[in-house]
Every structure is written in structure tokens, then in C-alpha cells.
Image (cartoon, rainbow, N blue to C red; front, side):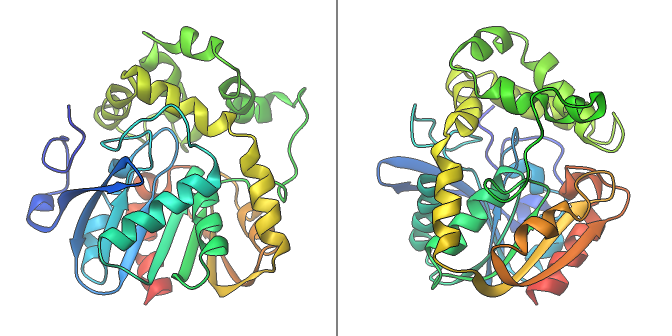
Length: 297
């Protein structure tokens, strides 16, 4: 499956009438995004272990107000999957190059999970480019207290993958051929209920990760230990002075996102997505779309 807008299944009705896939070259890396709508540009950054498809349920509503650019980071979806370049600064600079190539000099950004880290670094590193920023459902390296190695059982169930994903190579060997088991477990345990993400969607994500290069990239995001130092260094340059929305799921991080983001952004507003845990655009698509529209308006 190519994982472009014209190839993936189970999209909202009429999706193809509004959205098309675009691919641009940024410093030798082919970056893919699904683009559609009218109005100010809004860059959507994906979560791990997903790609642009994770935003599919909110994109039609957002496209009524914004020119939506749902991007694939390097290593995921229909973007190139190089062996290196998965630190936060490189990922953020990729996205700036993508938006420049698409003709957007200034733009809003929304990202969750790994997209939260990339979104913050993008806004902090390119302060003249980002107008408003929405961040959700992730820790902020250097500012969110990390749990100990021997965690309480309920925390261990949610966070054990952080340690596993950073291993040098045994994780690829253990997961290869068992992508449905490992990644299926992530979706079942990090949503509010085990079936909150439909099995048909899980199968799309898993299929994308069967490519050895994509599987490697999925762990490289975690192995890039320099990302935390990059976040801390950018925060030391001063807080963001643009409006920032920090969102946690009711059954996810709740106000933990806001607590972290307030340390790096002067004008932060918090929100909690009712009934949702981690995968907000799929668990609470109506609430997520309405909240982002109101914030970015």
C-alpha cells in the first residue's frame, strides 16, 4: 500500500474531493503531506506509531477553515525513510522546508505525541514562522519528570515502550514479523478502551510498519537521545510568546501537558479532551476539531 491519500482505505466520505497527496524534496529527503482546504495554513504533525492518517477524521472539518497540511515526518507513511536524521531539530527543520516548498511562509502548527516535541522545537527554532501552536499528549523532554525504571504496574503498562524502543537493535529483531502484536498492543492499551481505534485503522498503521526501513525509523525517534538536549537548549533561549494550547486526554495525561508546556511558553491555555486517552484525533475527533478551530481562528 502506498499510504497516500488516494490509496489508504476507510477515509471519511468525500475525502478525496478535498485532499490530495503532495511530495517535495527537502535536502534530499522526499517528504509527503496530504493537503486540502482554504484559509490560513495549518500543519498537522503525527503521533508515534502513526502517520498523516491519524488526523483523517478531523481533517475535513479543519479544511473548512484552514489550508490543512497533514505531514508525514521522515521515516513514516509515504515519506522517505533514511537511516538517520531522527533528532528533534532535524525533524523540525524538515517540516519548515516542507512548508516553504508548499508556499507557506507563516503557519499554525498542531502536533501530539512525537508531533508535540517536533512542534515545540519547530516553533522555538523558527519563531518567525509559527503563528499559533497546539501541543498534546506527550512529555516534554527536560521538563516532564520521568518515571523510575521500576515503575508502579499501572505506569509500567503505559511507559515501558520508552525503554524498549531505545535499545540498539534487539527491538527490531523481536518486532519484525510480529508488528501486529507489538503495535497492536500500543493502540489497545494507550486508548481509553481497547477497541477505541478500529481494527481496520490499526491494520493500516501496522501495514505501514512492516517495511524494515519504517520499523527502523520508528525506533530511531526514541534512540535520538540528543533531542532532549535540543529541547532544553531552545527553551534556554526564552519562552515562546505565541498563543499555545496544551491538551491532555481525560484518561491520558490530563493536565500534565499543560504543566510541562507552561514552563516553555508564556501564553499557554490548557484543555482536557473528555472521554479520550492518548489518540485524541481518533478517540475524540469532533471535540478535537472544534477545539482546534476555536483556538486557531
